[in-house]
Length: 120
Image (cartoon, rainbow, N blue to C red; front, side, top):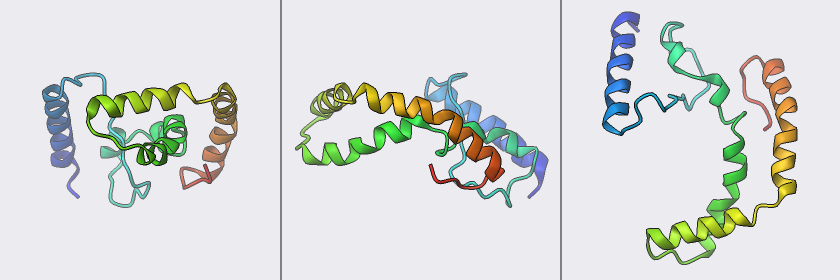
């Protein structure tokens, strides 16, 4: 992989796409695969580790939504929004408390695993 052209492509295309989507300055580019064999260190600055699925509380809290939504017969976008709102309101404070309390353990596990996959 040639570093300079790849880095220029990332810079140009990411910023241009973000601007077109009205996300300019408000997005974080994340990599999906934790395998870094094919990423140069200079291009790696675009891949934010702290936003990985291992540390993402939103993924843990939103995961049950997929199964809950499938139980409803969604007819349109408004109905989908209504179902999401109802289910969001049903999330218990204990659930969110447990997630927040798990952050130190998650952080320790990530540090111990040196960036590799963890159980969370």
